[in-house]
Length: 227
Image (cartoon, rainbow, N blue to C red; front, side):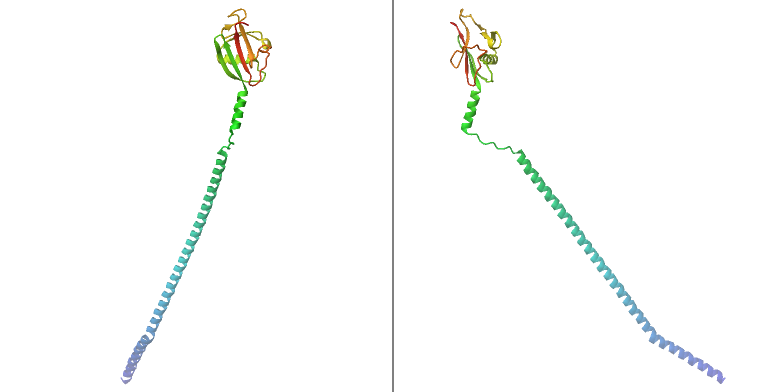
């Protein structure tokens, strides 16, 4: 029985020792491990947060760089657009200026009074004054345009046509003879009555078809009752 009690006591003591050792172990070592785990967890969280911050900063930098690139690209486009607009405006201005130069009529030098008078004199010289005088006075009078080689008969015929007057003739060419004008015929006022002409106040010795006029001549056809 003594041996049994001894073994029992020893077992109890060992149990107490084991329980005490376990308690000491838990008291000393487990809290330290938990503290280490807490520290490790905090370090991990800080690293994660740092990584997150770094990623945020990186993304912000990327965004800012993208924005800068966009701004630079837009500025380049605006500059190109402005340059293009300026070139088009300059081109349009040049075209307008060239069109204005083309459309502007050339200024003619002002004519002096002497030049105007000379031109009027030239116009007057380049015509023939033709008069048709009947028994009762002047039947027609006007200036006709002068042409090279115009005869006294040609001038009469132009004036008569302008006044719608008929001319009766005999012969042709240089041998033409005027017998009547506007119904007034030769011999209507006697055996010596008829038409004859004078140039610049004188009676030519040539027939009306053969006499060639000059610029500024005056031709008068007169009906004479006494030859």
